[in-house]
Image (cartoon, rainbow, N blue to C red; front, side):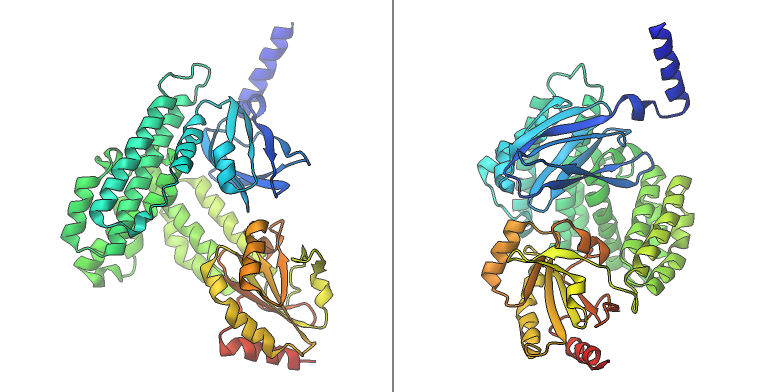
Length: 481
């Protein structure tokens, strides 16, 4: 009787198309000692190709447990949050990974991380490779190398990667049906990144057409000798995120050198995409192209204009699910932008300062607020700090204006170290949960925000502190009753 019930349940789940989701969840658990963060983010790509984010919560001992049914196919992910990062984790339905390490800092975690449990064997590739790279401490800046040096660097990298790959996958993991899939994925990742670096080098050095074609012909990785557009290559995240966009840029540059006028003709981009890519790869590239346009919109009018321009690209997509996702993306982006339109109440926040005091947006009621969104790792952000100080000093005695810097997408330790170096004398807040980065759409920084005395948006994308316009906008806002 028990067997009959189980068979009936299995039939029910399979007939409803949710068998994998129900009977094969992904579990990630373990302990990260000395982590500065108590919540970590992990993202997955669902069955429709959309990214979803889960939160991993650490207790006081650094222990965590996550069980999710969102994984429907093997893929690569990362655990990230400012200072704590474990990149390139391989996950699949039914995996139960045990992850441990000392998360005091990025290097320490790279040295000490261990991944075991069901699915642990395929994850040994990255564990072993990272351990070797950290031990070598090779800080070669590949983008600064000369051509011959880069070719040798890529060959050396491939030798190491192939060696580790062969060691890890020498014996098939009989209990892991995804082992071979991940072996192919890792190999494609490596070849895609190597090709990416070569193409990036060609762009930086500015070769002529013949030189570029010759270098590419001689150094094309084996996977791409029979073309770059194969549906199965979408298994590789590096192929999708790094190689494909740069390959399009490379081909576009060849056209530009041959006939600059042709590149400027209406419809060039879409026709070029159709020429270079086929099948699911074409759909993927078109989808990412439109997604990027949606994400880069900072105003409703810009979004609407972009939607009209992108319609021909959307029409060229064959996958109806991707088309539906893009339609929803436009709606979601519009709703997001509505929250930061001029005259609307500014998104609220409650954040700690570098001195431990907590500040909320309401604390500045009656004052004009000029906000700087920045990060310690952002060079342009720190280059603007002297100008920000100069501007804030002009209003130092004016009680009707507040200057506030908020660190986003940053590690607390790195943020505090940057403050010691820069020594800013205005209010410094830390976006520890990422709420400000999300609410104010901080996709690119530095970003400056201007809020009026009533707490309403004056400018979602205000001029930088070094501009005359910034000072004028602040004075105008102060002058208003």
